[in-house]
Image (cartoon, rainbow, N blue to C red):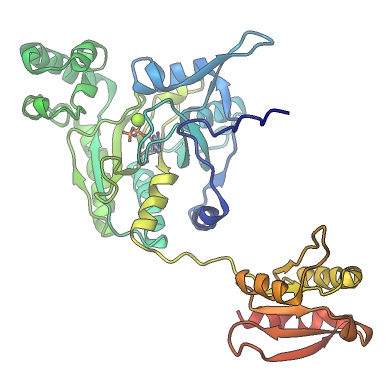
Length: 431
Ligand code: ATP
Ligand code: MG
């Protein structure tokens, strides 16, 4: 038989292996706890949605909808479907469909994989993970501030110090409209320094032209009319309200008047948490207000605000800063010299596990259990603090030997098999 061809993961989509997953689980546990403290409830939506949801929700002339979506036709019924590129549109769809806002605002959070067909590089993948927090049905800057402070609490919890917060206000649609006209007029005057992409976007999404990373366009962009100068009283009051709460809480911020965001649906507050430690993919968390999205997706008009963080980028920063992750510790390793002892050994291990002990069993191979020496070697390599030795002499007396492999290595005591639940705690407390 010909050797089957080796298969590999899809480009830009990563396995998260045991060496990494402890870090992921640690982050997820911190997030779960923190969301509970801020009274945000978890939501899990499907990974596949109707393509139309994202076209309507995110906006037709955005990077995501124009070129990054994994869309396909359902072979059975011809429906146009898409692997979700972000979480907000799905959450809004679920909120509308299940009438979640009938008795007032809701605070919710999600986590999971997202899919975008981008050029893979450090901090940019085709399957990546986001954790998002969204508050639907609340209009005031107090909730914008709450969400930002939730993120700040998370950074603190994760030991992340190297970040800055940039904020901006995109105002309301009519203010944007006035600014848009002034901006297009300005861009029309400066087409000589604009690249092809900017020219293409000039009429469809001129605000995004300001977001360009092209150095040759920076001077032109710096002189462009600023949206902030077009904001009315209400928008300014909202922005000032947010700043006042951040100030009162010692959260440092800077206004970046050119901060727009890649999704079309934002208004008023937008913000990003950025780090300088991850090269050019430095935005670890981004969000803002989207008071018109719910209506746009077919719901009854309601204000909303939220953010999403990139899990891979946050974990990269955790690694970069050398934060200590509590390693999953193994309490004990079971050494079984003779396969005949297996039934009794396993019964004891089961009792220990039910009492909370983490214990790895030495498994038999085709040749049997292996020598004591090789079993001890495995026990040492496992990182366990104790070896449990199920030798036949001890077993006959209803005993098992507990030998220390770490502190005071070599010390050993014998324990009764019958009351494993009694001495289980001594295995855990030494760790
Ligand atoms: P960028 O400007 O980096 O492309 P974006 O504006 O497209 O980001 P959002 O849609 O706001 O990003 O997503 C929120 C966060 O999700 C980002 O700040 C980033 O941390 C993370 N993120 C977005 N796209 C990717 C990706 N392809 N790979 C890894 N993380 C990503
Ligand atoms: Mg992007």
